[in-house]
Each structure stands twice: as structure tokens, then as C-alpha cells.
Amino acid sequence: MRVNTAALSYICDGGRETIVDYCGDMLVPVEYKSVSKWVRVPKVEDVYIYSEFLQGESSSEGSFLSDGSSSSSDSTIRLESTKAWKRQLIEGPPDSSSARDIVNAALHSKPGGDQVIKEYEKKKSLCDGTRRKVINILVADMVESHGRIPPVHVRITYALGITTLFPNLKDPDSKNGYEHFYDHQSGSGYLAWRLKTVQRNSAQEIEKSKVSFQVGPKTHHSMHSPVRQLSGDECNEAMSVMRHSSDITLVQDKMKATFQQRQKVVQDRATASTVLDLFPRFLDTSGLIEQDFTMLFGKEVSGKFLAKWPTFFKPRIIADCKNLPGSLHVDELLLSAQQESDDGVWDCEVAAILLLLHLLPPTSKGKKSPVKISAKDAAGRLVKFLRVGKSIETFLKDTGPAQPFLLCVGERNDSIQHFYIVMDQKAIPCKTQTGVAAFDELFKAHFAFAVSYDEALCNFYTFIQTTVYGIDVGSVKESPRVKEIRARLLHSSV
Image 1 (cartoon, rainbow, N blue to C red):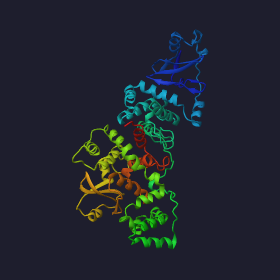
Image 2: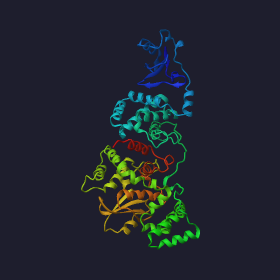
Image 3: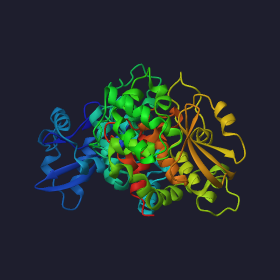
Image 4: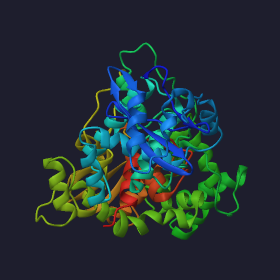
């Protein structure tokens, strides 16, 4: 008996899909008298040879198909609709064991798949090149089995299969852990992107989801602090009193009491640029950015970067960057970050922060966007250096309307004496003169002043926001790369 592939598209047991395409042939899981096993169905000229499947099965030891079952009319394998299984996937999550087996079979069936599994077993992780290989293999397998526009439940199954087969690739901060491979809400992820590349010459395109996401620093957040807020004449009087006061404690207290008024100013597009004119004490009183951020999110969130970065994230980022493709700039940053150079390209703490930017480089936003810039060029939008003795006023005049960045002043790049946050061509002194503490304030300035991230630094800052500070996790839009790096670093054993 010869079975045409168009007809034999699925073989089911109790409504559950049980067919896997494997090297052109099929592997069919068959159950008889509570015994299960995989059986190969040979394929010749796009036709599956059903009789050879039965003959091969009946001759095997412990066969659970009797001689009389070789007739197609008596076969225990039934051709059924998969609607029940698809409905089950819609109503609930796919079965992780089945998803893992599908991915495992696909990898073993394609060239290079075995090396992927060996790399994971050895390193408990996958490098970027190997991850791309996995995506290419699985998308090819998906397209072969389900066409160039596979259903959503198929994509979810493959994504779940990846994180089940390779658990250290699972993102613990995502709802399901596999969204960086496929996110059905936004239609994004490595699998989706590869599918779109395959579909580029096709008339049919995957419709993008219209799910709206919050936008980080510009999102309104309720005040976390219980400090009584002033309004009206009381607020105006407080703003006037602290403008010229030399009492730092009074300034801090009045700034707390006018916090809500300041948030109204920065959230209003028409007045946002006037915040440093209305509240000029930011420019000569360090620590006020930290104070506003703490009033938004509380002390626990405010302290997370300084608590986690030095001992947890920094060593893992350094270790992961050693696997990046050869680059003079990365090599120089690694030497500086590990304090292995007498003349480093940057202060050791700043160097480690810039290494993260190489793991989360700028991405192009489409055909109409400017040309994608390099991670090295993006670093120039994050930190700038000014030699001691040079005029800060002259420097500020030349900066233009750039997003907030860190100005490092010192004798050399690897020996910084002062840090400033530059915004609206004004320099705000950092509270603590270390690279880690200064960057902590730079990040917080975006929320204190409700300023959007620089487009080239969006992935970088989003990672810091969600993974380190834990702000708006699950509601802010994250790229698959952000989720992948989070999964990689959080599962690292360094």
C-alpha cells in the first residue's frame, strides 16, 4: 500500500498529533497494549510506503502489531483531524515533553544539529553563532512540515521545545520563558524573524500584533513615598525658598515636598525642558536625582544596581564578552575592565558597563530608519571624556540636544576624578565619584526627568531597567536579544 504525503499529513492517537518529519522519512509513535515506540515510515518520491512500515514493525522483536494487522482496513493507526489537538493548544499550554521531542528530533535530523547538543552539554549554554544555527534548523524543519506560514501553535511548540531541551536558555523574567524565541502576542522572536526572512518573497506576511507596550521612563508611575506634597501657593513658596538656601537639609526636604509638582512638569511635553530652570538645585546639590528616583520606586528598587552589578552582573558580562567575535575595541575594554592594562581605554568600572553594550548593540528599526551604528559608536552616546583643565562650559555648548549621558572628567580615560550627568546642555554633579555609582544616577535621571532612552541604547537600557532594577517587568517591550542575554547571564555559573 502506498500512502500519499498530502493525505497522510498527521497520524493521531486519541486526537493528539504524533507525527515527526525526520530526514525525509517519518517517525511515528505507535501505542499498542500500553506499549509505545517510534517506528519509521520510509519515503520514496514524496510517497510514504505504508506496507514497508508494517512489515518492518511486524518483524521487530516484541512487535505489537500482529500479522493480521498488515491490512490497511485493520490498521490500528487512524487518520484523524487535528482540530482537537489545536483546540487543546489554544485552551492551554502545549505539552513540554512533546515539544522537546520535536525539537530534539529536528536537530538530530539536520547537519550540525548534533554539534549543537554537544555544545550545550559541555557549556550549559549556546554561543550566538550556535543559537543562530538552532533557529535556522528549526525554521527549516517547521517550513518543511507546516509550510512557509506555520500556525501560531506550531511556533509556540518549537519555542517551548527549545527552552525545555535547553533549560538554561529559558528567560525567568518572561511569562513563559520562551518569548525571545517566539512571542505570540507581538509576533516577534528569533523564530518569527527567521520565518519572515524565509517568507520575504511570498505574498503572504505575518500580521504584526497591535499590542501596546509601556515605554519605560516616560510612563507615569505612582509615587512610592508617603511624604506630604505641597500645591498652589505653598508649593511656589517652597520652590522660592530653596532656590537660594544654603541649608542642604532644607533643600532636600523642600524637593521632596514638591516632587509631584516636578513630575507634572517633566510629564508635560510643553514644560519638560524647563525643569532645570524651575528646580536649579539639581545643578549644585548632588543626590537629588537619587532622591526623586527613590520617591518613585522605593529604597529596595533604588539600591538594586549597586547591590547586584559588582558581584553578579559584572563578572558574568566580562566572561560572556570573551566569547564575542574578535574586536580591538572589545579586547581593550576587557583588559580595562579586568584592570590588566596600565593604560586602559576606560576606567575599569566604565569599561565593564560598555562591555554590556557590546552584548546588546544597537539594532536597525527598519528601512526608513538611519543606518545602524556600531556598539563602539553607541558608546559615545553613553559616556564622553573631558580632560582636566578643559572648559566644561565650552564642552556643554557643543553637545547639542543629546539624551542624558555621562561626562567623565580626568587626567586620562582610565583615571576619572569627576562624573557629571549632562542633560539639556547642563551638567549635574554625581553624588558619588565612582563609575558604577555615576552610571546608577545616569539611569535614574531618565525616570526622574521622564526622558526617553537614546534609540541606539534602547536594548541596553531596557536590560538594565527590567533585569537589574526589576522595573515594569512584563509590561515594557523587550527585544528577543534582551531576553536572550538575561537568560544567558542569569544561568551562568561564573
